[in-house]
Image (cartoon, rainbow, N blue to C red; front, side, top):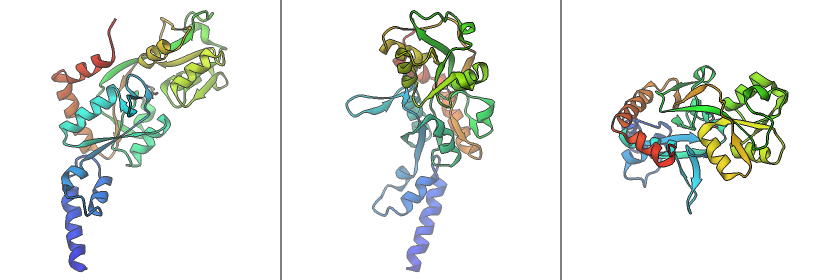
Length: 263
Ligand code: GLN
């Protein structure tokens, strides 16, 4: 019994030294005796996301897999740092808490770098630029952002779109939905007057819904980056090094061009 305990302790110690990505999976491996390939099983990179945000992360195909720009960039990063990617699909509001609690190693969800979020997590270098845009019905009297005051604005809860709308037009004028697409559906049913959301999902949602358009005038540019726990600087460095390589060798560009066609 004692010997077994020592062996187990050694196994945990050895596993811990191999872990590049997820400490939590080290525990799982230690008590999964039938798992013979310890190093492979310990090196899991857990990504928390909200797979309702095409083209960055969404469900697709017969097996309803999570695909998209973020999913592919994360897989490429995981490969570079010697880990297997595991994607967790949760509410957007829960992505940062999942990272700060250590349940996920990275949060990647078309997530904009903001000063407020930086209080809770570190962000990697940016891998994409985005803009918040306004979606309105084709026949709307809203012609630019200046016409939004007093209107009811639909947003996805907890996003920067929510933040802008609440700050600029007041909480009483904001309707929050769990998914961006739900806000867009509310717009097409006349329940809200406009939706503020990121430009690429906006294009996808407008394409899928009759009678809507995106205004030419938009909010400020934003940067997307990967959220990592503040104390996990080792992973932050590895992710940044991997990102730099993937930018330099054209991998990021080729992933983006698979999902976004430049007009
Ligand atoms: N970029 C926005 C944000 O970070 C929206 C992200 C999302 O809805 N997945 O708040």
